[in-house]
Amino acid sequence: MRKRLVALAVVALAVSTVSAASHRLLSRIAAPGDYGWDYASADTEGRRLYVGHDREVVVIDLDTEKIVGTVAGGPDMHGAAVVREAGRGFVSESNPGSVLIFDLKTLAKIAEVTVGKDPNLIMVDHRTGRVFTADRGDQQVTAIDAKSGKVVGTIGPLGGRTEHGASDEKGHIFLNLQDKGLLLRIDAQALKVTDTWPVAPCGQPSAMDMDKEHDRVFIGCRSGLFAAVDATSGRVVATLPIGPGVDALEFDPSRKQIYVSGGGAGGSLSIFREDAPEAYSLVEKVVTEPGARTLALDHRTGRVYLPVATFGPAPASGRGRGPMMPGSFRVLVFGE
Image (tube, rainbow, N blue to C red):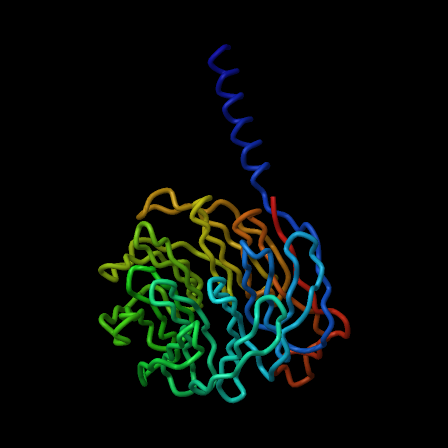
């Protein structure tokens, strides 16, 4: 009888632990503008959320969940990267291809730098003090000095559709070639590709982040997988299923958790735990909303922010989606 009670207590503890860790919708942050959106990024130290919203970047206070301003630009603003030590932010724009530089305090435009056509990725490598963007038009990577705002060099053409990237802060950046199923390792100082690795069974590698301490690249694959890759050898060490339509992934090193968002079907947020550098497990899979494909993570609170809007019925032809419902653009806030 005593053994049975102990066993029941262990089960109850496990259930309560899972329940306590469950992510749920906490709030919705409404933002004006009946037009598209792309990437979101959270500046945890500066307590701001940056949401690419086509014609501008919407800036939201992470603590009050109020809009504090916008970074004007466009059209087709994708994402923002913050370099706090330089007091600047950088936004990738497809107009047809530039990076807008803005002041972090005033949100005012400082300059605009021409890069390759249709830049998507925007990221920072703090070791070199460079901002990197990768474009899908000219299929190249452009490196910009964060302090001067000047282009210091390019890499390419790379011969494939560039997607997301990450830095190990040890001298390398990593970049997906989505249509080729490849992961590139690039020397961030010399600006040259040093390694090219296939990542099968990860098809159409898209979203990316890194565990820098353990040299692991995490990839969200459009084929419906999460993949962990050894950043020193290119070996795929683990894969797990995720929802369809992935377009963003972030790793939280303090919690040892990977967050993957997909906007396909009903929308999903998959959360994985890094049990060891070669062992990963699903913590939970949360239903979000259709189209909530990108995310940003506040590393202080563990809250996840997903931009989304509501669309009307699809056209009779069955091609494409219906019109955006007026006033429906918002950011979903999920947390424990």
